[in-house]
Length: 158
Image (cartoon, rainbow, N blue to C red; front, side):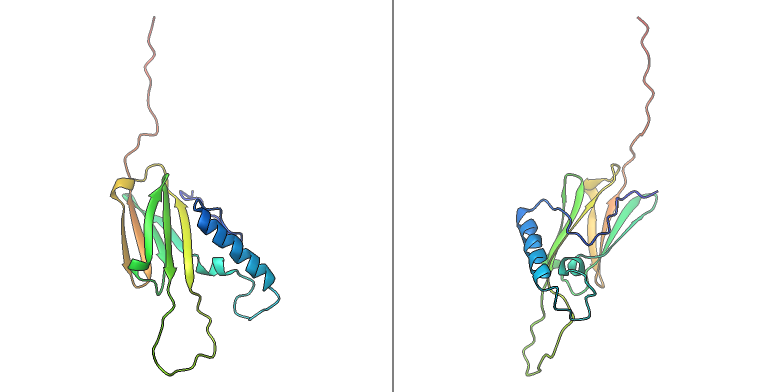
């Protein structure tokens, strides 16, 4: 049984922020206009899909763990927030600027903004969440709360 709803899609996920929605629409427009240029290494994937951090969703008895792959992204360039019991990761992978005389002949690395929403289970303790970044993996630890799922209701005799 999965505690997290997972959607794998090539479609852009509807997000709350109207500016990100506009950015996604513009990306789709330019992707459709340039689809005839096949550079060979993207295999039909969109830039949105390539920039969206992959996530692992794991739990143990005490916590939920959401791990995001964010290689090459500094902690200062991303934010983790919570809105309506939904974990939101957003940020930007910055292009490295090198000051030397080397010539670049091509690149396959992708840079830009990313955004990811993960709905949290009902028993997630959103007041005591913590996040840590180690070797390009952002781990968000969400403690569980003790929620009673069933309750006996006494019947009054009138």
